[in-house]
Length: 150
Image (tube, rainbow, N blue to C red; front, side, top):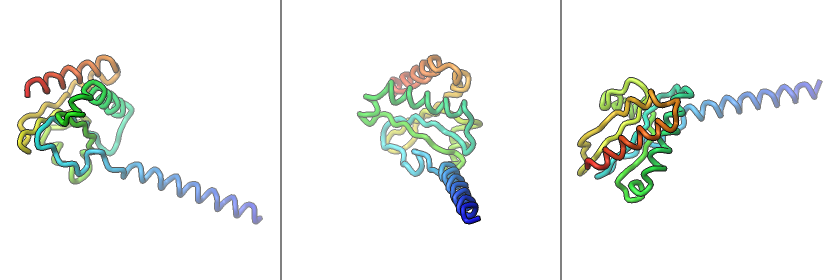
């Protein structure tokens, strides 16, 4: 009888701990939360919502690889920043209107003297999400053009 109570208590603790971990993962802030835009530079944003599918996760992974892997010098020099932002958080909801977001997206935004001067939503990331090489080529090409036209 005592062993059954201990087992029941241990199982209950395990379940509560598992639920706490799942809640903590959902509430984990995005990397871009609270980060002010640069005075001068380009931000490559990945915008996501609270609910994330496998394709959404692939888009985030591939966009991070394309930006951080292909443009390390621009990041190191402070010309380029990569930010992941949860657009469903109250403080980030304005991005949906600012960038006309209708789904998870990669957006390039340029800032000069603290003001945003231009932006581009790379909507085709959804078309390439199933093909890493094509995705990387698309994002790299678009970002290179964006950086060149500064």
